[in-house]
Length: 487
Image (cartoon, rainbow, N blue to C red):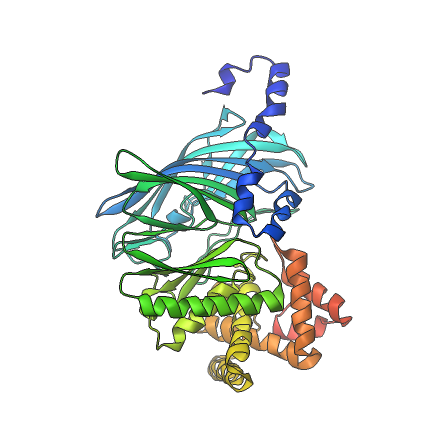
């Protein structure tokens, strides 16, 4: 329906627009089903985050899988800047993703607009017919199609169709991040590490797929309906999450547990029962420890999913994946990967950051949290072995290649340097803080950081400021030495 044919006067435009955003507002009652009871009020505390509604269908053949859908984004300009455009990202078009994605029928407040694509076809700039003033809302509607091709492995195979398993994160046009005074985030480099930088939103997603396929997503499924054509329609809500991920397979089985009132589900390929139960125990212990140390996980559930990724594991809001090759109950690596990815629910999902600019801020902290877990579960000697291994990795690499700070971008680290500095030296920075100011003080400071920036985006400056306030200490020299930047 074209609103341009209906709105025949400025007065009528104003009247309709006054009610139009409200008509597309999402149901807070539905969203509450995805939150723990004591955190349901958080939804109302963030009324101006993007409201994203997706309706899509998944078509699967032996050669490819395609998602076709429509997305509505009710966007509020929370910056003091007047916006002339809104930017979305098409991650499947990244060379490191190896898929294809396109958009059509783009409307702003019911008016058709022509989006502008960058040379990589991964950045969509939507020029607004009328500039968006601070505190104003606009409704963007986009039709999209995303495709993944069978048995093609690119980089980490994070977006893939391998062995009958679909991994489809970022399958829809994902809203970019607007930084006040800087503009929309447009980085397209992805040589290694994480590609996505996004802000917290409320997602209301309806997906129709072949009934025999088991779908695992961020958030909570609140309804499921069987259709006459052998498909099944699922309705999901994912409030206060910065992304919405989808995994699917005909082979998934599930084992379920609970920790601190949180439903924890492990989804695994047939035959992996023993490992699934072991992974469930790892996840339960990790949630218990991180809840106690950093602050409570607010969502109603957490999913751990076996996939064909060639990375050890990958984090998404409310969902983590672990590679099939690690699905071995006798392998310590399964425990390391599971715990590290669960730690990302605190450091990346809940407290967000630009992973393409400051990967240490979530990766090094998740790595340190993993070592804390091993200390809690297996004792201080076992914990020290991890720190010793990180010291060896960092110092051995530095001896041959030179030392570096941990606060560089992934593009600034070549090959093994990324692991040596972000994953090895990085957690040692937090150990240095614990040794210098006391581990209890560090945990207290990280808890304050979590509370201050939960559901938001933090920077290294923010972390330093919180720690300084918590300890009443000036940390410029420490941050300059280890991170390479300070307040």
